[in-house]
Length: 110
Image 1: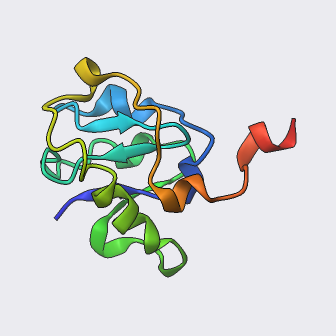
Image 2: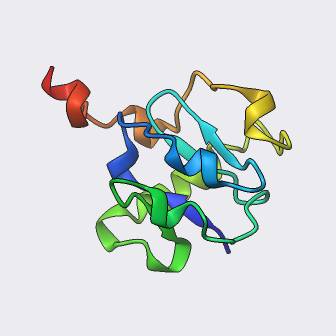
């Protein structure tokens, strides 16, 4: 079991959750943040600090955002388990599902 990040994070990338994560398992992609399912320890520290409520325990993801579970898991298929987001830095890619979404948030308006 793990936490996942859903649509409200796309094009926002607030990063408040990264500061709270005690195991450094929240990675930055091109358009959103991703939680590594094998590195997450299910502590839940990230969930309450997300200003747009984009983080959910995997069993609690709203139906309209179910595809984000798969996107979070598959994002790491090529990366494996790097062992920490801070040493990896920004990863200039996104899961194909996320990459195909229309622009969202403040960036889309401007």
